[in-house]
Amino acid sequence: MRCMHCYVARWRGRLAELGPAARLRLASEMVEAGVEWVGITGGEPLLLPDFWRIAGLLSGAGVEVTVNTNALLVDEGVAEKLSRVVSRVYVSIDGSRETHEAMRRCRGCHRRVLEAVRLLTRAGVDVVPVMAVSRINYRAVDEYLETVAELGLETAALIPVMPQGEARLTGIWPDAETYNTAVLRAAVRAKDLGLRLHLWCTPYAHALRLPGNVFYGNCRLSPTIDIDPAGNILLCDVIDVVLSNAAEKGLVKAAEEAAAHPLTRAIENPELSGACRECPYRGRCMGGCYARSLLVYGALNAGDPLCPLLGSKDKAPRDIDYHG
Ligand code: SF4
Ligand code: SF4
Image 1 (cartoon, rainbow, N blue to C red):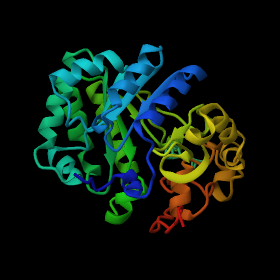
Image 2 (spheres, rainbow, N blue to C red):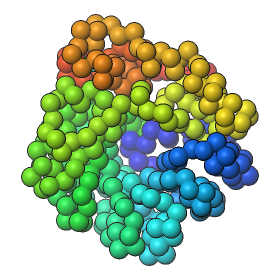
Image 3 (cartoon, helix red, strand yellow):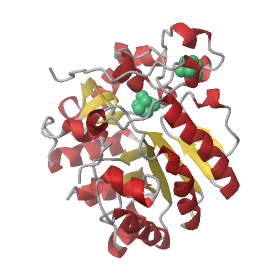
Image 4 (cartoon, protein in one colour):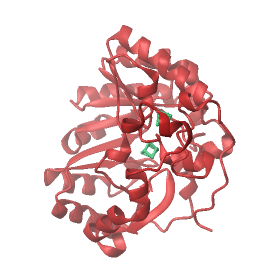
């Protein structure tokens, strides 16, 4: 299965992934360093044979573990095991049955995902569904939220598909009008249904003046690091801007190097230009998503391409060869 929007598809065959021993060592270092939360994402983390060992080691040491999954490998036994090692499971549900299966190029997988959510919920797992919003499914937010409510869940999340990986090839990443239409529709429908709506990677959301059931943050202010399968600490996992390598240097030293890196400084204290400089929300938004800015405009702090206040600057994403 190769989803139309998979941003990590760019790594296929290009990264020297760490082996099980190095992954386990990194997890141990996280425990020793006092890391509070580890989010295991993919690809599909449940395909990793050592997923259970790593998640067990972390959770056994008191580290909060969450996992993002397409849930296709979740049966009753897996749901029960997950209830013991993770505090939350994020499950991808990309709109209606038709849009979910079109984006995932996978017939029948929508029904299987809903069944997996029921199994997880029955096993006592906190499930939060996540819809990746694209040009294909942005009108299907109502059906998505209705499904979430029918499943008895209280929170739903949206994330814009990024112009990266497979989405760069298929061109299904949304422009500002498309994504913000989805967000505004979702905010209203979620309120009707009594759901909390979380917006991931939407730091300019202040500009949309959304109701109180909608929540969002800003990664520029978050004390987290992104580590790719090769142990690289990235500025963000959507862009291959490497700040250090945790497998080569050790987690603590690499994290210190990453924190002191000039590009980290550049996103924490951005020099904004154009409309962002005069924007009333700049203190909280800080120029929005720097990964999207880099991918679309070729610079980290050129403003968020999805922000409605910046007008329609939508362009085809630039060709950036991080590995060249
Ligand atoms: S830089 Fe953009 S894609 Fe990366 S975490 Fe922040 S908001 Fe999300
Ligand atoms: S104009 Fe710039 S700072 Fe203001 S909300 Fe938009 S992206 Fe953020």
